[in-house]
Image (cartoon, rainbow, N blue to C red; front, side, top):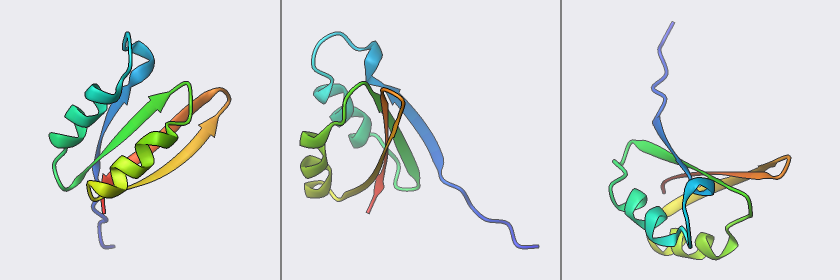
Length: 76
């Protein structure tokens, strides 16, 4: 049975950050290896971030669970 390689995932929970989390998110993306994903957890849908992600060559999937948003980000 062939094994599937699953990407390693790093979690950034911006609910724990005081102030705007944008710089923390950008720093996490800049250090993200090509074969890893970043799971962003926030209390709001980070719509302004989506355009930035696309411009920097990242793809994303967003899912709302209760009042928490989970955004999976990976290199496109």
